[in-house]
Image 1 (cartoon, rainbow, N blue to C red):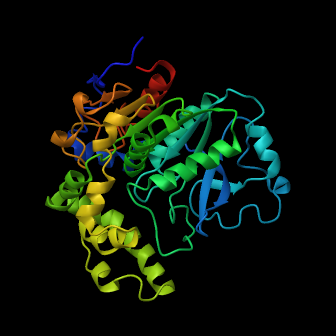
Image 2 (image 1 turned 90 degrees about the horizontal axis):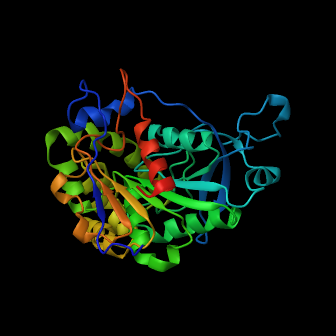
Length: 366
């Protein structure tokens, strides 16, 4: 069957509970909704620029929580934060990759996320329970250990996505790799797919969840209204500013501390640090160059792009439409779901709908 010229559109609803009305309530449901917790085994990979990235792995045969007598000395050192229980050993790779054709998922987390984030936990648990290998690479500084360089991570770092994908493919070349990204990680993945086109064809299928594909519209949505500015920006900035101030102490004169300390929105933070540190002229240049939306027409890998129309992080009018996207893309845009939560079920709700939606797409393309 020939690939359609434009994307397909799915508007099937996410069955959000009636007692969670509106995008803000559905987004904040992540604070109390239930999900199964999962532990990982961590692998640290050195980067070409002298830094490191931490990859958290789970899969059939890989036992994360061992008894104390089975643990090697130092196996839990440096793992006080996040969901990793121990460090990877040589024998663990054999346990993970003994058979070819096993399905595997690499999941890119969102802004200030990690393998301990509720969405990462619920997705990892779902696929792990079905025999998949799951790996969650951490963007620099997000695994609980400060990265070595003055730089951090950003919404359009295709080079970093490429390195992460190449790293897991090198580790387990015989499995059937799928990729998914949440929020910032989803935008970065989509941008990479649009730029790489045929070179990303080794991926079986991909998904982007609540990706802010128009970063200008997203940044303004989070910065201007009073409620999002206090609900979300303040939470993100608390950890982001602390990390960058720690970098400023290690790299004196490199970071404009005064501007950083006076940043009260993500726009001001990105203008003071993210943009200049990562080679952009200013925040508008950064947001414009790194938005994935203009590249959606060039994606060749089968890809699910799911955004709730009431997502507080991206206005509905900024969502991609079918005519802007390649035929390899399925747009799913339910009216409800909030940002990267899609809560369902009885109180206090759960986060099981999203991983099931991903599973359906990866298995059937629908």
